Structure formats: C-alpha cells, structure tokens
Image (cartoon, rainbow, N blue to C red; front, top):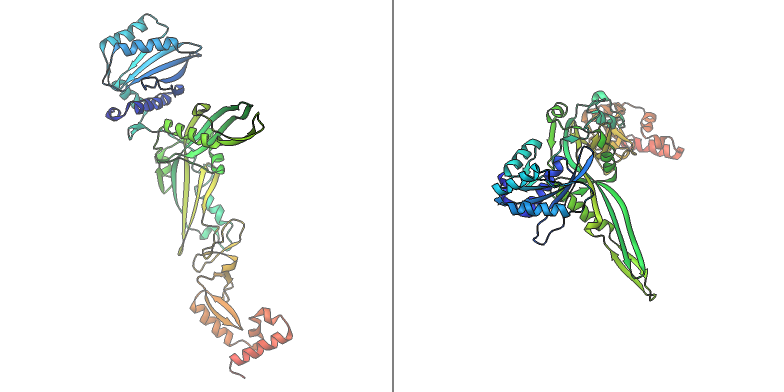
Length: 454
C-alpha cells in the first residue's frame, strides 16, 4: 500500500473514512478541523445491541508515540456521547513500543475507554480482507451488485423483438439476431436531509425541512444526475440486485463492459452537499420592522445538510444493433429485469427524415431494408408491396409517378403498360379516372398524344 505514503494528511483521513464505511461501521463522518488543522473520524458500532461511539485519530507519519495515544484517551473521556466509547489510532507507519504498551495496559485494566492501534501493516491486511482497490491515491467506491440486465423469464433480445412488432410489413422470421452488448454503469443513490432556519429581526423568514433522494451517474469526472424515469428505475429496484458476475453475463451478451466508479464515497458525499446547497438556495422577500421591503438570499450551510446514505449499484445499459441489408437499427435502454427505460430507439424512426416516436406508423421496405414513415413509403406497382422512396425506381405513367423495386421491374411494367387498352391506362391514374368527365377526357387525349396517335 505504498500509495498511502504519497497522500497528504487530509487525503489519508478521507481514505480512512471510506475504509471504515466499507468495514461496516455506521454514521462515519469527519469531525470539524481542530486548531492544529487535524480532523478526526467519528463513527459508531453496535455490539450486543449496544451502540458505541468510536473516535479515530489518523496519523499520516512514520512513527506514532505514546503522547498521541494519551491525548486521544483524554479526548474520548470528554466526547459528548450517551453511551460507551472507545478509541482508535491508525497510521501509515508504525507505533513505538511505549505507545503499544500504553494501549495494551488500557485493555488489561478494563479501562472504559480502550484504544485500538492499526499500523500500516494492519491497513494492508484490511485492504486484502475487504477487497479494497487503491485508485489514484484514494479508495474508490467498490461494488459487486447490479440491477439485472435482462428479464430472466424472457430472451435477452425480447425488447428488440417487441419494438419491431410495431413495424408494418416485417415478420419476426425476417429479423436477424441483433448484436447485444451491456455496459454496467456505476450510479449512486443519495439520500440526504436538509434542515435550516433563516431569521432576521422580524423573525423566521424561511425554513427548509426536506428529505431528498436522487440518483447520479458515478463515473469519473463530475457526477450527473439521471433523468427522473431512470432514477425511479434504480430506486424501485435496489432491493432486487444480483451479483455482477462478468463471466455469467458474457455468456448472454456479445460484449460486456464494466465502468469504474472512479471516486470515493467521501467525494460523492461532498458533491451531494454542494448540489443540495445550490438546490435549496433561494431569495426571500420580506418586510422589515420599518415597513421597508428587503430581499435576502437564503443558502443553507454545509452543516445543515446531512447525507444519510450513498448506495452504489451498477445500472445496466443494454444496446442492441440489428443489421438489415444496408441499414443498422440501434435500440438502447437501461434495464432492471423486466423493467426498462429507453435511451435510444432507432427502430421507431424513419431513415429518410426526422420522423420518430412510437406514435407514428412505420413500414419496412424489403427492397433495401429501410424503415420509413408514411410519407416515404409507397406501393410498388408491379408487386403491390411496400417500397421506400429512397430505393425505388420511378417513372410517370398516365401522368402519375409509379414506384418500382428496380429497373427490371420497371421494364416489365413498361411492356405490360404498352399492351394495355386506353381505358386501362387511364385507370393507372385513379384520381383523374375517377373524377369528372372532362378530366377523364383530358387524360385520354393526353395519352393519345403521348402515344403518337394524334
């Protein structure tokens, strides 16, 4: 754990806060800075039904002597806590013999405030025990649980098959197997309480008493709060997570990728506090004792915000790509078993324009593989099947544009059209043929002129 030696004192305290949280201690937090700019970690444990406070002194130094242990013992005695208390000194280095002897004597004498000593060797053992991974000098969030990336009662491609059912003129048998991939994206579900009261000479002008829960993408860089529907997907399924078994999912998906959380729980906690500060900051208008109107910006202090929990979990982002002739159709969603939130729908989208969305009608063109909206799909004249405007060969007959799969179909219809009597040719333009007598006569005359008869 040589990387610990490269940390500053404050960074080491941040690391230890995360270590203790991963070890299962409760209500782990750092106390206010003392006069010498040190910050102790305070936490709690429950033993045989009794809650006990633990005051931790972090020393990022080569050796720790007896005075440090004695000073902590005095601090424990004066610490305000309604229940038993004990202490702990942790260091990246080692303890002197007098320091170890002092701590041992407290244990042997059944002192009400015993002190446990953890040196650099102990920290290495702890890291191995709980699988902590040091990352850029800090201990990033580690998690081995994920929301389920697919419905175990259905095929992994079920979502894609359901999407294609809305497309006209395509059968399930016509669809190739899509390429499927899953990216396990780290997210954190944060629960925090904000309690603040703002007063002036006229009394309380604003009060905040709010519990907030939100979900954020937790990859490297600045966390991003997810959309409301994705947050609901996560929070409603936190009770039904499964182990992130890479090999198991590699048997189901063509590609599997796991992202890193990239930051520590402490960093996410600090980000959450800053975000809630901004969220709850507001300007209040009130009237003073002198009947003058004032505007006051009410911003909660960091101490007004208490982060109750940071729950890490992986959110599966599943992406299917279906190749049909010359087109590729992506379909991407966040998954939690049978529940999902669509992120990208390239199936309900016309390949020729911006039309998209499940409320439109789309038709499959078997000639080129296009999915097109009603404005870009036509009926092929010779076969009577749909063809899209992007691939169709066109020519005007009876003053009306006709659509064909290819030049061969066009040539076949030309021969058929040449043998048609005039009244059948006129029927090729049903709008005119079914209209007024004058329009029909004009159409016939036009056909005679085109045919060189008159």
